[in-house]
Length: 141
Image 1 (cartoon, one colour):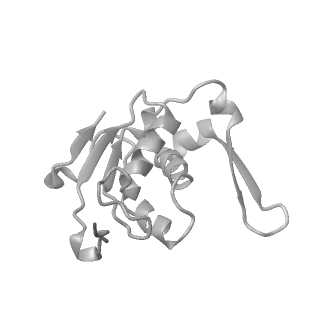
Image 2: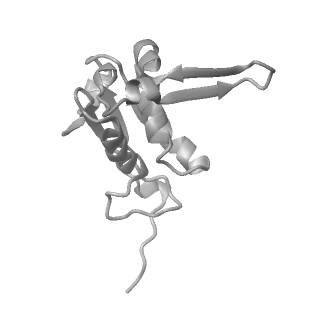
């Protein structure tokens, strides 16, 4: 029996549409990461970027459990003294709701060049409108 190896010319990418309204953030991110990495495909190979495109709509209406809205924080440091910025999940959801989902999905992807290419195929929109209707995205529930 021969082992089949997938190459770039063998890759066929599909578009998937996910509605984040009333979905738990972590569970939504797991589904998106699996689609982006291509692990659901039969011809999955760990060293080839074989994943699909994922379009997430209604990112502003994503749900979290417990006290995460006030307790979960996002930090960034500029490198200068006093340059530490700490924002709560509630504040980030109001200003940039797409970044919450992007950050959660990125943490579930490989931490290398392959993961950097995968995250570019994630398209997140705060509202219900998206410009990818021509690609006929398949709806994921």
